[in-house]
Image: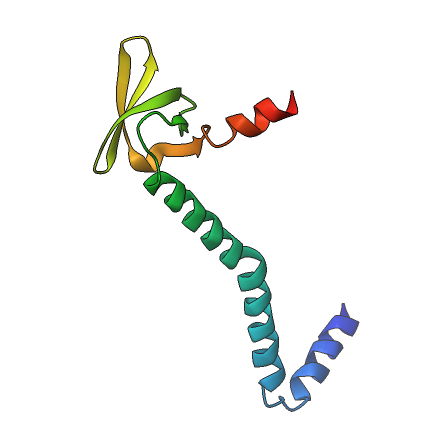
Length: 111
């Protein structure tokens, strides 16, 4: 216990540096965080927004709630999704997570 107290007292007696090393380290940490976390997330959000804006009638989609359906009508920020038969639901455009229309030809080619 005494050893820890003596080490703390010795560290406190040393003069403080200019702080440039700490600023440089914080800048490097922010740069790494930006490159590996923030930038990819922004690219993913931009791609999702482009997909939502390019939706058209007849596209097969999946909503955030996991409902599979076909776009029946687009009206501003809402989309009428035909689920089955005469069942249609109106959802917000931001709740569309995936466009299945673009993936189906690729899946059929694999078979």
